[in-house]
Image (cartoon, rainbow, N blue to C red):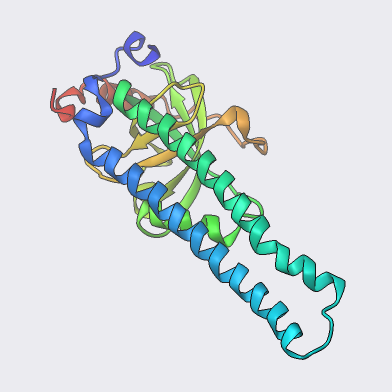
Length: 232
């Protein structure tokens, strides 16, 4: 594990045991997503069905496109089942990570980014995750020399982002750094989801933070002595 190689603190027990609230929040999210998708399907399907019924009630033969609308609730139901199945599969993988992987302490450098064409439903879901307003951030995990060891896209609570001096801070990370990971701001109880940078198209950043050696050294020292916070 890279964090151990760099001397960063790693919890002795799996993340789900160290922070039991994390798995509970993950479970609440998947249940909330189920309800949201279900409500959308019921409302949309019901509205389309009523439209077709109105045509029949008028005594005229409904146009061909009305039959297509009538079929849409069925199609929506099939899509709902598929989306729900995929969501539960993703939840199982994320939950397994919490149950099997420890928390790793990492110094990070963050850079605010712009996410294009984010659907309103996704924005609402992220706000529910972080408990309010959020900032899309490119998060680079740093080795003791300040070299990037891994990169992610994350959505940080606005308050947490503003507390990071010049975009630098320390996060707890859980998971394989090559895949989706969980993150927590130390002493906080907001479970964040991180997407690997390899799956994101980044606009070239300005600067590399080379002039922040002193700040990085301070964060590295924090990452190497945060073990007591894990409760091990």
